Structure formats: C-alpha cells, structure tokens
Image (cartoon, rainbow, N blue to C red):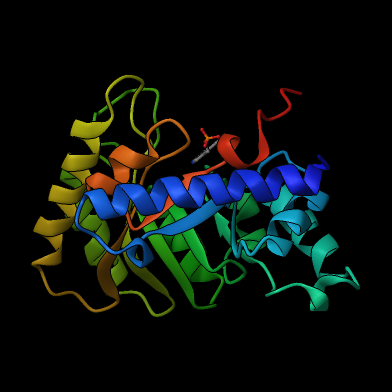
Length: 235
Ligand SMILES: Cc1ncc(COP(=O)(O)O)c(C=O)c1O
C-alpha cells in the first residue's frame, strides 16, 4: 500500500467512526466536521488527504502552517484535486506570530486571552475564532477559566474584525466525557446571552482517542491527527 492509499484508508475509517458515533447519538453525520491535524506531517501527506476528499486541516505552529499552505498553493496539481485546503490554527499562538495566522485561516481555535484577541483584532482582517476553555482548571493547560469566558465574549462583542463561533477544549488525560459535557453546558449557558459577533454554534473537541465520546457529547468539529496520519515524528 502506498502512503497515499494508507491515508485514504485511514480517512475512510475515521469518517466511518464519526458517522457511526453521530448516528448512535441521534445526530446527523453531517453535523460533525473532521479536521485533519497535519501538524509535523509533510505537505505530501496533506495533498494525499485532499485527494481522498479531506478539506480542513489543523496546524499547531504558525510558521509551519504558513510554509505548508504556501507549498500547497504553489503545487501545480492542486487544481486537479477535489477542493483547495482550508486551514485551521489549533495551537498556542505568541503575539509575534499572530501575523502568520490572523486573517489567513478559516478558523482560529485557540483564542485564550484578551491580549491574544486584541492582537488578532489589531491585524484588521476578518477572523472567525473559537475560545479555548480550560474547563478542568489545570495549571499546565492553556485556555480561559470558565469564569473568565463571559468577559472574553463581551470583548468579541465590541470588536470590529474578529468573531466568536464557538468553544474549543483539550481535556486532561483520563475520562474526557465530563469535560466535553462541561464545555457543552458552558456553550449552552453563554449561547443564551445575545452578543454581536458571537454565535456559539461550534464545539471543537475530540481527538483520535476520544472522537466518539466527543461526538456523543455534541462536538461539531473533531480534530484528528494520529488516526489519519499515524504517529507524529518526535523531533
Ligand atoms: C489541539 C490539538 N488537537 C488535536 C490534536 C490531534 O491529536 P491526535 O493525534 O491524538 O488525534 C492535536 C495533536 O497534537 C492537538 O494539539
């Protein structure tokens, strides 16, 4: 099997897992989008996934995203593929790297502070975002504390360029279900508040290990790397 065939097979398996989980939860499989996490994987792997019908790709490193997107945009075979890729940023973002991401990605998943929101807004380009929430209150994890979420959403409401389209979560190790449920409950609570520029329709949660549980708990975007591309290089 070639690498491209392996990626196509893995993608089909992941799509089937997501669809089965959605049906089991009484949800339409179309209600869940698959984000292929291509972090540390070469542009050739992304091209193989696009050829297999994958559209959305998630990257954690700003320069890697910039370089991979440029490489693929310059690829003369791209027009023969089903659709151009759509890039999502899912990692921590330092303010000096905002220029590589703001206004350039379909969705920025990891807004986790007023300062980052302000830096993205200051670029002056429309940018749909999600807020990363640290529902478990882990000291080592990024994300806003649930108690700080309303103030951050109020800041979106006052912005001219950024929009908030939902919430994102990286759960602690162990059983993720209560954390997924907590994120959904937070979303439901804040969705009851009307704010300009804020429409909390997306829940970005679930990875290779727990995508089915996330779908059962209402995920609208699952971020899957290993099950599609295999283990990431450690270097
Ligand atoms: C924010 C985020 N989401 C999703 C993933 C994908 O995880 P997995 O390879 O377990 O599917 C990663 C991987 O690093 C990640 O950093």
